[in-house]
Length: 357
Image (cartoon, rainbow, N blue to C red; front, side, top):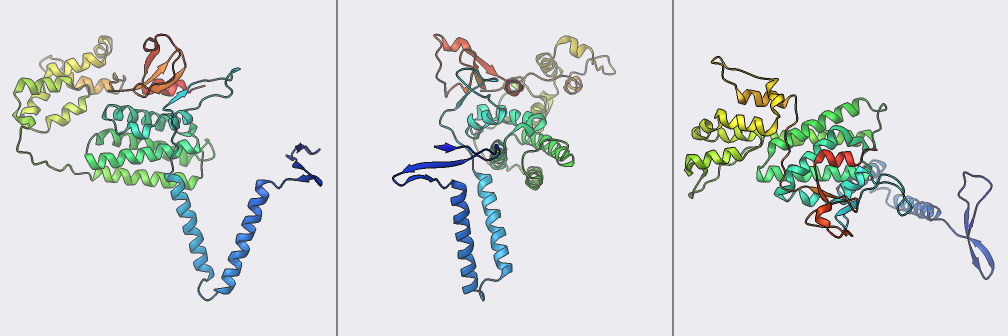
């Protein structure tokens, strides 16, 4: 039975009825204080008995090491949830109180496993990049730990399989730029966590950037059929499947034949028409000396002014009937008669916009 005192700042005491009458319950904080006091006294006894073995400097070193290990273990922990979906609500209702935040969604949707799926890898990287640019300060402490744990797994994955290093370099560049601005302006902006932790994270990011910069692609020895053995029309069809101009340039550096195919004007024209509207590239025409349109130069010029179309193998989905965000293969408890008609693919920018208030 709680007893509220007259002082509104005090939580009051908890009482329990016994045979001898009402007795006050000891709070958890008092128990912890008593245990800590016991531990301190116990350490003092040990120090007095083994004074020749343990001196003050060694005790201080042990204490610092314990705090460092605790911080490391606490940072490596990650929250896991059985359900891989989350109910998105922005205001309190009669059935649900509170609202859903970006940090909660980031913790619940199992991005740690999603990066192992090649269909979702680019999607998760783009999402992390958008968070790094504008939403990093809105993450809670637990969400920050999950964010950097997932980022660590992504970097280690790229270092081991040598795939998609350019995407991760762009992500780390945006993240380091944001952290530099936040650390310099500490006190002016809300930065959850100790400033020393953020400095350590920035140093970790710089280490990752250096590792990716020194990444060397190992030449694979294969006596079977290689990309160079394919006929020209098949190589040309592969290039026409790419939606990123940087991927075309990278593939063109493999062999002289691929370089010749990657310089095809028709290829870059199709790429410009896929990503940009006719009005957009008409405003930024680049002509050669002979009066021909330089589609390749136009593509990279248009990148500075307009966003490109996003293409992902798999994305998060939003159920308009249930207001639930989920991975499609994991599903969610939908109550609609025709659930598939209620599902909408969620782009990374749409994901961020869902949690803006």
